Image (cartoon, rainbow, N blue to C red; front, side, top):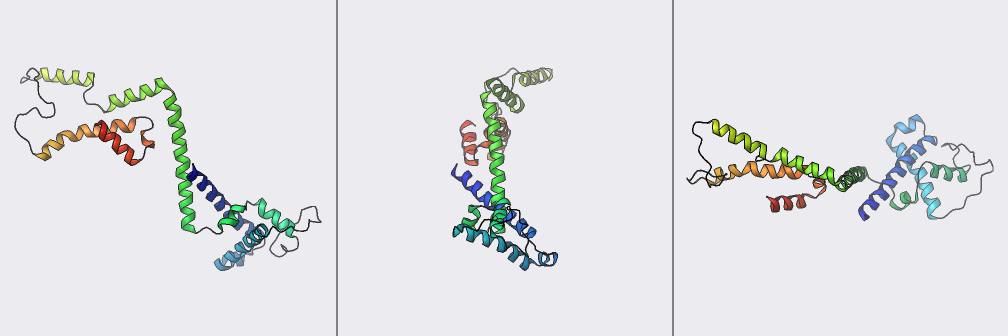
Length: 228
């Protein structure tokens, strides 16, 4: 929960910074200025600096004498500080932006990616929770996962036995390991190959269980090993 709160807080900072750039563009940066990266950065920082000083110093500006309807442009933005501060707030600047300051591009990308992942995880968790509360649906999903991944279901075994009976060399079943019916010793590689499809079946079955994909990689591995 703390991590999610921090991500939301940092996300609000990004929104504030992006809105601040748009606000500074609306505040009178000409096309020549905005085409120059250095001038554009200075223009954006001017508005952010004004807002930061206003908040940190708790400045009380003189009320607007024009019904708070001043048009704030770059050439006249200092005429009415009251309306300028009001516009900063209107475009989304917040105290979080004052506290954190500018956010580097890499940090911005990391925060946005984390926010997107967090949002996606919450959506999956909500969907899984709803499905887990529906017992008949959950049971149906588990049964379907078993039928789709197990090689020895009743119907498949019946089909195997039917094909075996049609074979001239068919013999009655004996007490032998189904993975190693031959008495001769096998190499370690051959032994592992016989188990590979069984392990794959366990992995595929687990992946189809509702909520399993929400576990961490370590938890997934532990549960697969304890149930193999």
